[in-house]
Amino acid sequence: MISRTVVRRGLRLVALALVVVVALVGLVAGAFRVQFTGAPAGWAKSTGHDALWMGHMWVDGRRAEADVAALAVRLRTTGIRDLYVHAGPFEADGRLDPAKYPNARDLVAWVRRHLPGVRVSAWLGQKVDGTLDLDDARSRANVLDGVREIMKTGFDGVHYNFEPLGSGDEEFLDLLDRTRPLTRLLSTSTPQIEPYPLMRPATRAVLDHDKYWSRAYFRSVAERVDQVAVMAYDSGMPLESLYGGHVVRQAVLALDLVPRDRQLFVGAPAYHDHGLPRGDQAESVAVTARAVKLALSEHGRRERFGLAMYVDFAATEEDWREYATHWLI
Image 1 (cartoon, rainbow, N blue to C red):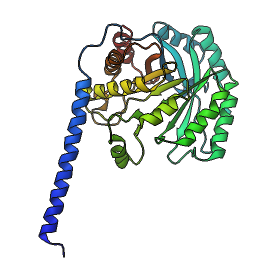
Image 2 (cartoon, rainbow, N blue to C red):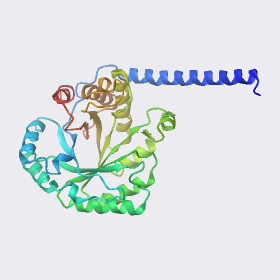
Image 3 (tube, rainbow, N blue to C red):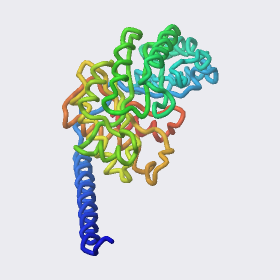
Image 4 (cartoon, rainbow, N blue to C red):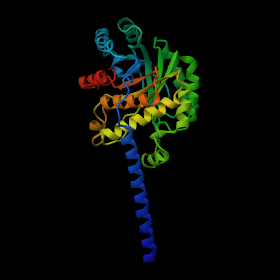
């Protein structure tokens, strides 16, 4: 039978652990709030190197040249020079069925005609937590075969999006290395970077997968591609001030880690179904833009840097207005 002394001692230890956790959460929240303060430098804004994620309807036949022409009217007054068009996903064994992108060749031609100078990449990926196994060499070979085939349609490049990828995943690095010779432009979206020590193992214990990548692994990925897009949204932050500080931190870390000759994007949440309490209120294009401006002001000028809007079919007129008024000027 457990004595009362042992029970009291155990309760004190639990209480102490809770106090420590609450104190650490408070410290992180305070750090984020402080980061999202001050005024950005006047020069901190778009340099015309932004991107847009686009839905599958652009390659499966649901969109025509008239739709591209209409899109061009919107994009000509923006800084968007890269389009990531969803053309997958890969099958569970890594194969990419050409029937998923029957209109790809036409889309590329229409973009060339109506948006000269804008690059268009095939956005390809799959869930890797039970669907596609990138640890399997045959699956990775199938992915590469799919890249070879889709590049024949005229895409400028390939944009990978595998989720959730664990920090330190060597097979993904191998896939990037082997994709490099197959495409003129290689890019990838990434999870967020561990903002402060111990946050990666703490969130992994709760989520059972990595929410954050280590700085060293993020750098290893960035060195293997031409473009990196940090998915800074879906942060779980309930307040604008916390989300803003979180984005400042992500952008500052990424600016330090991504080589200057590579393109860095910070994802801006142009969608409204976060699925978390207050998520839609806390995260916005406007807050993201201001946070990125603060990060730039702290880090210094960088030409190959911009916002990536996610995603075209969910973006509202208000999202586009916020992009124009908070980032372009």
